[in-house]
Every structure is written in C-alpha cells, then in structure tokens.
Length: 395
Image (cartoon, rainbow, N blue to C red; front, side, top):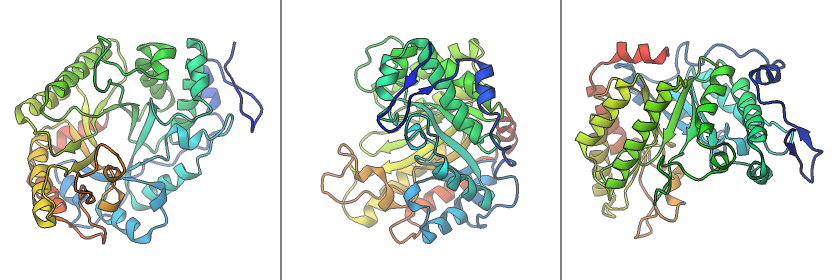
C-alpha cells in the first residue's frame, strides 16, 4: 500500500517505499553539490560580529527571509557581519512541497547562492515540525498508516536534504517537539501529526534518514523555552537531557542541540541552571547552537536609550554564560534588524504600550545598536575554545 496524495490541481502521486534504497534512488537525479559554503575567503569585515566570534572558533550569523533577498542594503549587512546563514522559511516543507508531486527549490537556491557567494556556512531549517506542513498534506498525514507516514517522511527529507547535500553544515532535524503549557505525556512530547502517525519513534527515524541522505550534515534538535529560570523551563531541560541520553544509547545520529533563545525580558536567567544544562549537553558529546536569538523587551521602559541599554545588559549576561561552554559553536539571531522581528507580529509578544520591539542588533536604518556592541564585546572577551569547537564541527 502507498500513500496517494491528491489535490484538485494535480493527479495523485505515488510515494516511494520507506527504505534507504528508496531514498538514495530518489536522489539519483540530483546534481552533485559544490563544496561546503564557507570554505573560502569570507565577505565579513574585520570589525564584524562574525570576525569577533571567529577568534574563539564561533560563528555569528542570521536567518535570512525570502522577502529581503532583493534588498541591497540588507544583503550588504548580511555579507559584512555574518559567517553563517539559515533560511527563514526557504527550506521548510511549506515552501518546497507547494502541491502534491511538486518540489520547488527556487527560493532555497537563492539562499544557497548567497552563502556561496559570500563564503558563508549554512544551516538548514527545518525537516520535521508540527507547523509548516502544507495544507494539502496535513489531512493525508493525519489519515496515514505508520508505513505511509514513514514513506512520506523519507521522500521529504530525501528531497530537501538531497538537494542541499554538501552545502549544509547542520540541519534542524526536529523543531519544537516538546509540549507547550500543560505536559500531558510522560515524555513531554507535543501532540503533532508526526507523533500521531508514527509514535515517538518519529524523532529517531528523522535523524537516521538525514544521516542516510547527507552523513556530513550534523543532525540538530532545535527547541524553544529551555534557557530561562522558571520551573516549567527547568522541567523542559530535564526532558531534553533524558531524551538525548536515550537517543545516544540507541545510536541515533544526533550531533547538536539548538537553543532558540527567544529571550523574554519578564523572565530572569539563572546562570547556575543554564551552565549546568549546557555542560551536560557538552558532556554527552553534542555541539550546541544558539539558533534564533532575539530579546523580547516587553518588561523594559519605553524610552529608547534606556530600553536599548537594558536589552544590551541582558544580552551580555546571557552570552557571557553561553560562550564559556566549549561545545557552543554558532550564534544566530532571528534576523538582525528591528523592523523584521517576529515579536511585533505575535499577539503574546507585543509591548503593552504598542511601541515596536527593539529586539535585534541593528535598527531600522541598519545602524549598529547597543545590542550589537554588547554582542561584539561578549564575542571578543569569550574564552578561546577554538580547538574543541573545531573537533565538534567535524562530527
């Protein structure tokens, strides 16, 4: 039996069998990928955030949204400041599987070309997520048998990771898999179409499929709300550590853990808790990435100078803890200039006074803000763990 995908716009499409052979066969027509981006001379300037970070084996970068790909001023800052990029939406299922039987990589290729032209590394985001599933695929996954759902998952990961093979340093294999709010399952997993169709084993499966398709890409678990000091985040940290211990014992090829780091100013950071969490991840042999950094300034005053100073101070406290950990490899902000932040569009993140958030290191005129300077100083002052980080990058 195979999963038949139907749409009013196209004929049904047959999904290949859920096997390694099927994945490799599906990649046979893929053009060989060029060498990993970032191998040559980079575009960043000597005074950039990436240059300061690279001194200790770190990389700084940003998410790049498709709507900014024609903005010359925006792209100039990307080239000057960044050593690593991640597509905002361009490698998500919703953007690529636009209809049954259709794989559209036109937006993906824009980011691949940009990184290659700038000599920048690339991350991939994201292979398995509860959100970002095309509307046409959602009911099909919901009705699928385990066999059918696995077939579809193999086809999807084989397509996107195969297309980008050799160009992606690390993939967010799973994204936001822990439940939000009340935890109803002992394992803490979010109820998703993938969990319903495949059970908890979908997580291990996704990492194994990526490793079959692109063994040189580091498989990453990307998760939110594990950084700050409230009891429910501590519970999430414990769930993360427990699941990763099990994955390592089962031989799952998980190489990194990503902390999204959408940091909320109303919530404090407990340096001791955070250091312990990072240390335990590192002791399990994982690299660590800060994947979506920004600073929700809702709790700070309206005055811009005061607010910018408080955001910068908060960022420096966080980064001073994070950058002490030798396993931390990359620091990426979720975009880099204030008008682009998602915080202003999210109903739970808007400031009560209605003012726009100042969450990122550049302002609307692409000027470096106090946050930029705090990040630069934190990178420059960080201990040199270059050798340890280079070893982890080779995993």
